[in-house]
Length: 561
Image (cartoon, rainbow, N blue to C red; front, side, top):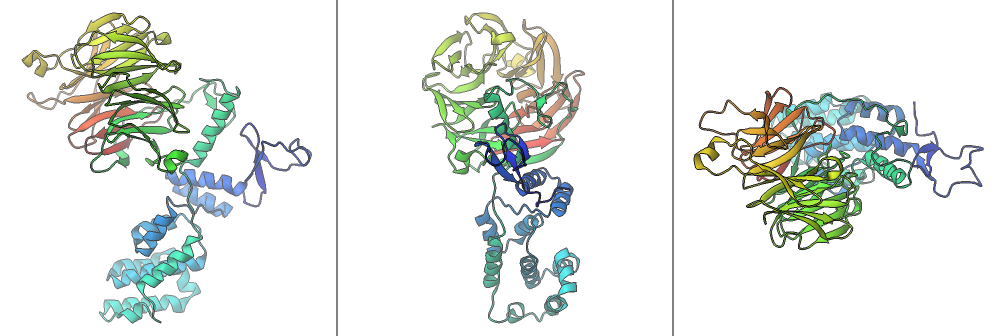
């Protein structure tokens, strides 16, 4: 077993843990590495405890805390926690206290106050349960029978309708004075820490090793063994069935773009109010390990953020705005690395994507064009013209990002030569019944690469009950269709995406229904109601079986199996 008395660890220049001050070691007295840092074993345990708490590993949390006698005692905000104590919001306080290791006297004072207020509020069943079943009060009954009996008598008086204020708060005390005393006692016992510290530290160590050449870009690393992973253990993909987390953006605000970082750590949300916020996928909370977000300084545009994309190494984020501007950000510092103030004039930027090497950006716009921009030069390198109206999506594909595919509200999907801007192919997918009646082609909501050899595209037309797999030449390979919603109704798909391994195709309807299709059989395996009408988009975690959906109602919802 690992106990807190096992001195400390030293973090060497490669970010590896090693015992500190080992006799005869090169980092011992007299030859200590100036880049080494001493880390207490208890801090390492707290990192693991935080990971267990954030990921719902309650049994592991309890076992590790009990065996090592190390407590976490962290809250999201100390001031907010103490305010909840002072306001008597025990439904919020007690669940947090259950994860803490507090001095017995302070814990008894807290539970005694909760018991008194529960009795005072005539919640007699809850008071009985607290007095006779909670661990703290049963311990008090054995160690301090007189104190416990006084609470039992108080309960009896209240049940008989004979409770008076001086019975609950003798010697000139009051509810407010008792709450303030409890809050003052707990103030020195709790602290706050940024979320996901273990993963953040691992990420920082890996980035340092990558910068120093220890890890080559693109290597699949076995973090535990510290070497390149030879085989990747596959996780079976499955569709989501339940709500995992909800990210609320405010009543008058909503997400217009949501994207996952390739390393799976970050969910970026671009909002109608122009702000860009970075969240942790697992907790659904703002990433406060990023110092600028901790200080409430956020990435932002002057108008609505319509699109986002991460660089392949997850170090950069590109954003497109309704005013036609594009910005490139450094994720770890929040610094704006590049601005394209006139990327598309005053026309909104509907789509942005980094090239595989991260040196170029392809964008689409309401102005009907697709453009390729150089990151180092800050200039537009190639302009692709040919669509008749708004271009809703554009992305690279193929070896070396030599081609671009785009989809427009004119109903056409076009294939382009990324180097010359020459149009190679132009076609429309099968049209929904509504388009056949009016004669107008259905707008293309989204296009994504389904497989690379041979290249096939997943095309999602708007106002349709089908999404289609198409070849580069425009031949229909397969359709995923909702069959059971009535002859006069349509699913009205607004967006579609593919799971990381390609096992599932997800199509989101404007009514908030998420349809989950098997990619190989074409069978719809599940329908998940994600939002009320007004759904806007769906994106998949880069590695896990988690989906994010967003809607005009304001919330971003995370879904898991």
